Image 1 (tube, helix red, strand yellow):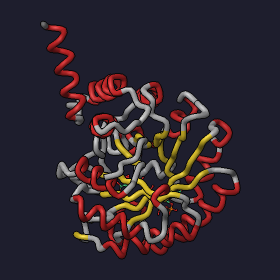
Image 2: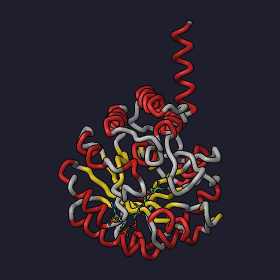
Image 3: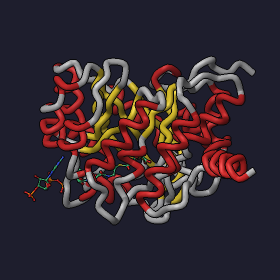
Image 4: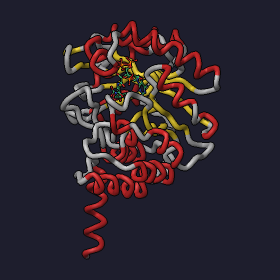
Length: 310
Ligand SMILES: CC(C)(COP(=O)([O-])OP(=O)([O-])OC[C@H]1O[C@@H](n2cnc3c(N)ncnc32)[C@H](O)[C@@H]1OP(=O)([O-])[O-])[C@@H](O)C(=O)NCCC(=O)NCCSC(=O)C[C@@](C)(O)CC(=O)[O-]
């Protein structure tokens, strides 16, 4: 089996990880989280969303977060922009970042599209098209993410042809990269490979990523299955934070620490310092009053504790 030498981790903890939090997380805490991730070696991350604050109040401090975080030329900063209103607000930060990316996020499920962004799949493509066009005009990268590529909380199983359909549409309007999301974490390796294969009809392997939630504990297996196909970019969330407000019961993404441990154990580089990452994940978990969602972090923290005691 030929595995890649390097995998790019896109940490989505500050966005996907926190968007569903009921308690307000102060901007300073988000800024510290993002800066900690960068210090640990993360070179691509989702910083915030430019969505309706009525729909997702936790992301309402998008300006403060972007203004406050460390700016480095070797880091790609991504923000979610579902429409031109979101894009125009995101554009105000263009000059702060050498590598800035907007994310247009659609769905392979009609029902989820309605619940999440209040429009049909066809309407979402119409809304995204001017965003992609304007982003390119301003030298901003455009990533498309497709939710519910395997299962939907409202429609059940999703056929891979629907993934292919939405991929084709997003690529046609200018998405340079496609993220395949298992929003509710129901995927298993073969199903994930089928969804990725469907998308690969319209996008090449270097421009596709996996975004696997871990609701059923399958995300690490799914990551390995994607790696075996040659996928080398993954969205992950420090300490396994997260969930989507419009996918009730779904847990966070696969923990960044768990993926990094897997990859380093396979001799695949990520550029990430696992020990530093564990500290970052533990700090935000403690702030949220939450048990750390990473098994690897928990094991490392227990080992550290045992070493201190002995
Ligand atoms: C998409 C909209 C905005 C459509 O919402 P809408 O209500 O259809 O929009 P509208 O154009 O009819 O406008 C209604 C109001 O919203 C305002 N508005 C309109 N757009 C914006 C904007 N961009 N920023 C701020 N405000 C906005 C607009 O100004 C107006 O304000 P009002 O006049 O009533 O005061 C809404 O449905 C929304 O914000 N949804 C939330 C989507 C979201 O953030 N979901 C979670 C992220 S996606 C996810 O987690 C999945 C992913 C990516 O991780 C992958 C996976 O795992 O599946």
